Length: 229
Image (cartoon, rainbow, N blue to C red; front, side, top):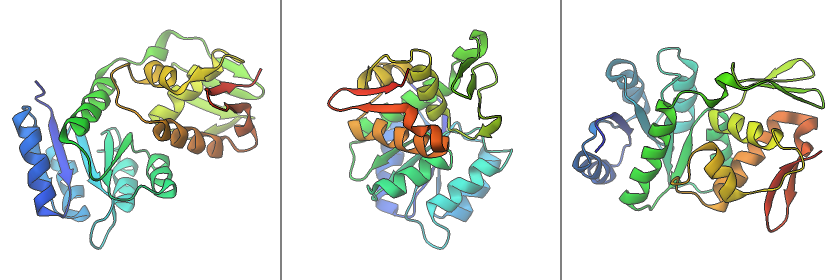
């Protein structure tokens, strides 16, 4: 049973209570915030292990809040799961590019939410796998697992945790075709709840950040993805 501290930033009181009840029943220490401004204050003082962040908030929206959370040294390392009624790809990509670790679209099952939370919390508590790995160098791309750093033609590329892991996984075996399920298992564990759209959105964001090198990640229709040899 979890004992971690969870900050829920959500302005709908009914949804607040639904999530609070289910998380408290699982043993989580839950703190509530009804606005982005209140949530940012709580994030600094409460020091949560994970933040559940609604995108549709009054005044300051969730994307701006995520930007501030990830841009503040005091809170940048806290994993964020976006909880949103917006399922549009552009909104999801924007959140992931700002550093969010995952997203879940309303309406959702509390069991699914808790499974997603556990996967992110478990990943965040594990030591980095890359500490003992050798750098990967392919076509002007350098991936340094120990420092979790990527450069393209000498220029740094700012990736989220999951984007880095996906790139490292694919680039470690050029030409090898990975199914979406294999990618999930490789970067987050085989019990992570996922849909095809989750991996597709991460790949889309990763390609955009890689610029001209983004086409090195090839889509194998009906199967998955590979890093071109």
